[in-house]
Image (cartoon, rainbow, N blue to C red; front, side, top):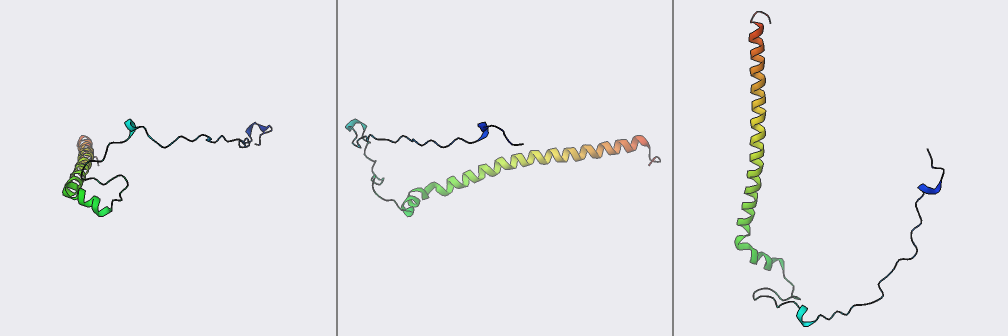
Length: 110
């Protein structure tokens, strides 16, 4: 089914796109300037290598990663344990129901 009117046709893109024509100066007032970096941290323009970052993080990074992994595994195991319990309960319930049905029908009815 094709449309008979032009309502479904996409409109042409706008030809006029406004642009920024005024430039704001880069200078900040003295009250808005950031505070100097604390001692032991690199200056704002300094480049920091990955080795330097790792050296700063190394003392407790392994411990923090291990704790995060342990917590994630613990959370997963709690969910798994609950699912296993539900599955086992369903299998046991089914076995009991089947045994009771067979007992009611008698051993010779099978």
